Image 1 (cartoon, rainbow, N blue to C red):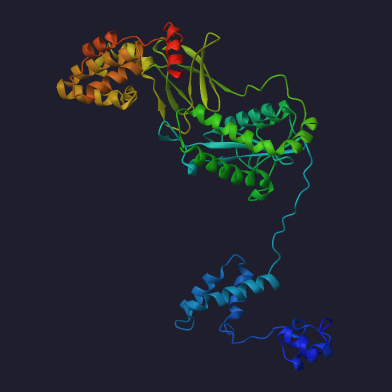
Image 2: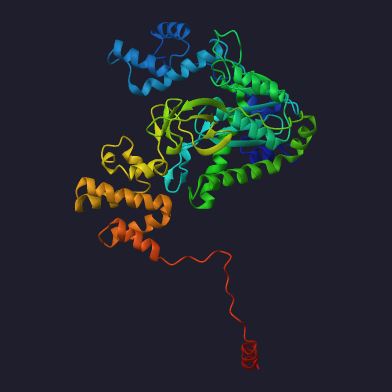
Length: 478
């Protein structure tokens, strides 16, 4: 109307009649301001008669779903309600809860201060399909996060034990280079006592707090949102790791150490964009102690006549030289250290759970080869096959000879693997099985001794260079 000379032209350009335009002009209101609010129903409420019962149910049990109530009405009144009316009841229950129902829990955003709070938690990683040497690598990550800068790191572990907590937390603090004022965890039993216990935290966790000088905090029961920073970091980290594995083109790693290096590179990449806030935190962190806390549990055990020990309800083999000796076993998060006469004599991966065993054939082969008759019914016979090729070789020997003779031949082959080279013996057995060649201790030993020695990595041979060859090349160019 401000641009056109007449009302008729303005109305035509606005897409309405002159009479309608005159109405809006005289009322001085826009069309959307004149539209009445839709507060009436267009059809009868099908749940009007049964709504008092529905309302009573959701007042008593706020967790009840509309679908559960709808199915109950269908059972009580067959034929009255059709499946297509479920959405109507869901909408009405939703409106009642928003207008008349109980108040919902409110989450209050917190202001994070630099250098004050860090959070940690364990997260399972099996759903990412990581493999080591082609075998699924079932593991967890102890995840550590600074709430102000979101700087994060992690440690591979296999259980939510105190050993895993201590190792992961100490790894994080020493990588961080300082200690925040507070450390918050969920209510895992490795750190937090049961509500009935007079002490809030376990003795081991209190010792860790005192040594590093941080204040321990825990979330309330069934309130994981209180550990929200690390919980959300779980999601972001797993998504980033999944993408990195896709970009890598393979989820299989040659060794667990290769996977650890890959994880550390990913953490470095994620932390690269947080340097500004991280640099604000660093000066406010407490200083680290002079060295890490050695929190290994120590057990005094006696080696049995079977050359085994029992530690935390699991069985491990040690060298037969230690039979009848009292040894010291230092149990860490993932490894056991065997000490004798103030000297570490062995180190082996720790078993998690109960009733398992880890037997190293090298510990007992010296005497087993002298007592081949004990092999057939040996309790830990399955541990005497380092690879599948050794198992296939034993089965082939059992077909060619009696059980006693087959055991004798196989144990002598296994003794070669222990004293010479397991890798070379395994390769020879693979060749014999592939070519259907008869297997015996003598043939394996002959093949092992006749094999040519591989050159050392430092043995480099460089042929002498004849400079006249370059003259020939130049002549061709000319």
